[in-house]
Length: 285
Image (cartoon, rainbow, N blue to C red; front, side, top):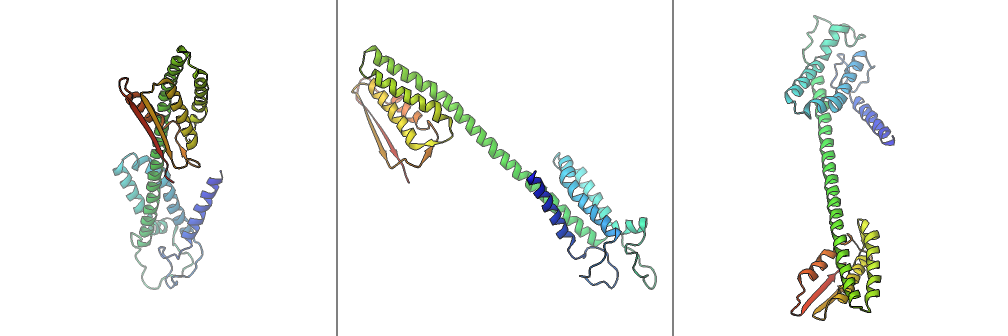
């Protein structure tokens, strides 16, 4: 509601500024100076209401119904027709209601022939037409660009949500297999592995729902994952983890690093020879 009120005030102020300009484009009595203030005649009111009505009709009705629907011929004919009517307004008004300036003393000599088209009205109409059409086209373009950005963001969020839905069960399945292997051999690391898994799942269920998480939490998540992997793997696999820089104060999309680490274990481990896995995080300020 507040935004609508501001828009109405802006429109009123803009029209007042427009109408306060010198009446250069309107017929005036002979002898009037260029900047002389004159009384508001009925003709001036009719002329002004016509151009204001055209401005809003063009923005809210003519452009959406014709130009946006690619009815270019109908749009051009309608605009041309309104142009002819408004350009002929002095002659039409004089024919229907009498003199434009009723208090003007009669012109000496033979009566003047009023031109068919008013150059002033023609210029004003073209100015309002270009201004209103430009505003409408630009605002529609800006809205379409904003909508395209919103669609792209929604698509990205959907893809990330889908990726998370794929990562979480896959990670849980692998981790449970690791703990099962430890339990089957009655390893003393089973309880620690369960505790690590609890911490990891808490992170997945709470933090991973956010768009961004603190970088140190995601790195701690990776550390816990690596510790679980160390409990399962043999001495043939050597895991080297190095962190360069400070993660404090930085954020990252949750679980973004996990696929790379998982792939290192999925494709970088051999059962017949030593398999060094080096994971290095370098954080630039």
